[in-house]
Image (spheres, rainbow, N blue to C red):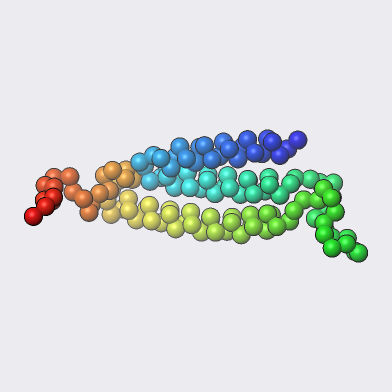
Length: 126
């Protein structure tokens, strides 16, 4: 019952993340990346089955998990992904802040220091 709802919520996270990452403002792009990471984590968590009836512990005498138990591997992967996405978000925050300090804008169209608008186009051929 919970898996379809979380799958839909994960899809909404992906939709919002793609919408924000297509923006030309670096703050929105950064928020989109953070939401995308949360959507992927939720998708992995949902794929690992959600159940409370059977804990993910292998009983004595068996080699595998009992039927209907939640898979603990996606949960371990999500813990690692949370740490990595948090550190990546911190790096993006510092990068965006420094770019804003140096350039004075968070609009990516106005950040084209290497490609000034007033310079003539280079020659096509010789």
